[in-house]
Image (cartoon, rainbow, N blue to C red; front, side, top):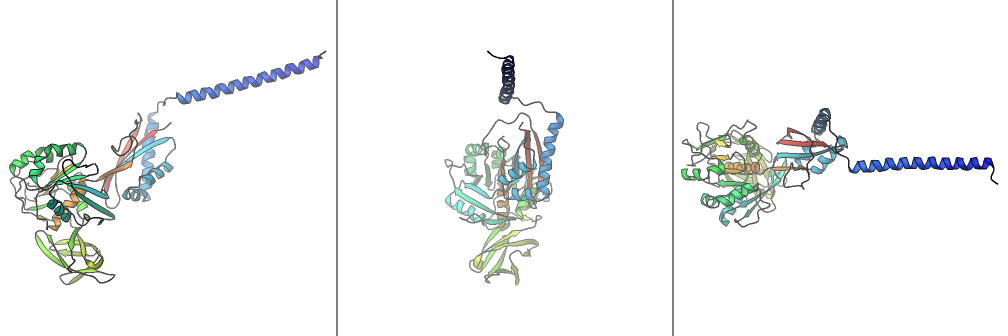
Length: 424
């Protein structure tokens, strides 16, 4: 026989068990609801204030890295990983971002020459230093390399940055091929004099029109305007060296059609050059015919010397009979006329330079600087197609904010574009 006291105990235990089961059921429901809502969750609408905060946070993070000098270092070294890591540290975990930098010179420029073997050798000679195998040159505070390869219209040009042609007839005879390269994002360069008929034929590629003025004297056109191609090329020009062969103890170069000779002296640990009986060591500045030149490098055994004109006001002397009218895309222009001896098209993917003797050092310096500026690099980290062709594409977020700014690292003016969005 069960006592009343024992019955009350059993009912109390059953009540407690039922209460625990009810709590378990509630907890299970909460967990299930949370799981389902996680998988079916949609992005909530954001207030305009929250979206504005995306721009503010991105701008603040970039400013921090600019003020302490980190951003300039990362961009100079094209270090996307460190840039990504530091921005991640400076921004909320709920914010995703991508970044793209444009306007930087490439560390290696790949050139295809649609040329005869002799023309390819001549082009390599014009582009020295930097065009020999395993050779780099000092380009301001960085090292650069130019790699030249003879190509045909059937060559694999995936890595090529720019196609150079030195024969106008070969260029005109392959216009459909060249247009295809432009459509694929490549750059093209023609170094040649042109007749009036050629100017008409090539108008659509280079945005050419005829001039009646003289093209003998040329200088950078509107080089102080940041929007002009001449601004960029003139900045690259004063950082781009030309090559003087001094293997015999002396070597010659040509500035403004005048030839000058220097002696190179191997003096053990402190090699130097001599001009007009004056010694100049590496890093020195000498003045020749009103132009200032920097002694950029004296090689081991003084077998080669790299010089560079550092005067943006340099006047280039040409014998070109080509009559091309200047426009906003001109690099050079006659100071007292309307004739241009070097220009790009408005898209800045096609460059024409009037023919000049290969021994003209200042023109070789200009040509190299122009090609480097044409083939500048775009880099960053971006899964959302700010940087097409380099990283895998993903579906971009439907709501994001973007900031853009110009920045300067002591040498280069470059553009930064940064997208930000809410991850959750």
